[in-house]
Length: 176
Image (cartoon, rainbow, N blue to C red; front, side):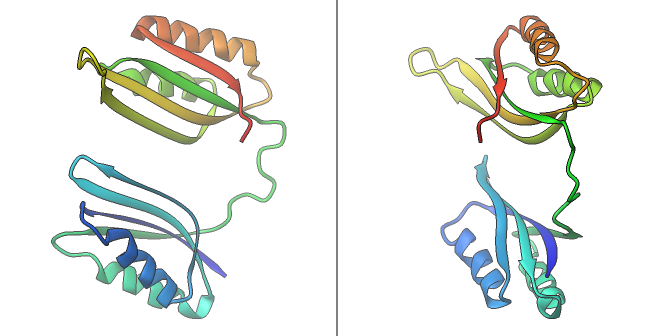
């Protein structure tokens, strides 16, 4: 089997997901993991696809053929990743909540990068508060922390960033 990452972005419309997944199935591919979301007026799919060596080029070409004026498509060969993983690294959940303003994601991700922490996944969203209409920011991330970074130190440093950014942060062991 060969592995492929595909990113497809286009105007949000009924049938977007069906059209793409039909093509993957047509070439006997299997979507191993995916993230899909409407962002503004666009819909985006990010997929990790397994396909036989014999059908790989056909699938990649088929996905590219979906591109054009209304859909942007990128594909990239990949693998399952490092089978050795990161021995001794621990997964943590990082949640951030507060009034939305510029720089929150950058400040949190900058601290994580400086500490050598790897972001495995991160979802962010801004919604309107029910009564006041104030924009509220939420971030939900899963990170892998190297063995030389203690939980307490990471929690303390993230609390300091949260105080600077006037948001709340919660760090806890990731439970999957």
